[in-house]
Length: 70
Image (cartoon, rainbow, N blue to C red; front, side, top):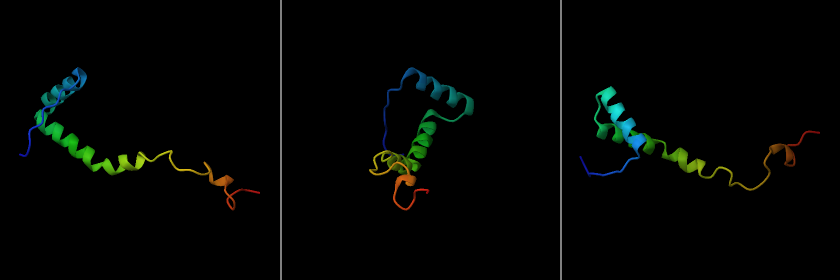
């Protein structure tokens, strides 16, 4: 294993982690690592969504020249 990380969790998240570990038989550390891996995989989606709503121009294609209906 690489590095050790100490994290303070809010009570509800700590309780979820304890309960999930007990129910699944998987260690808390393994659950946290798995969740971090999932977040890492979905990061590209988060970066894209950061740009949502920041594009200038017409909000609808119908108001652009050549796309409007007669």
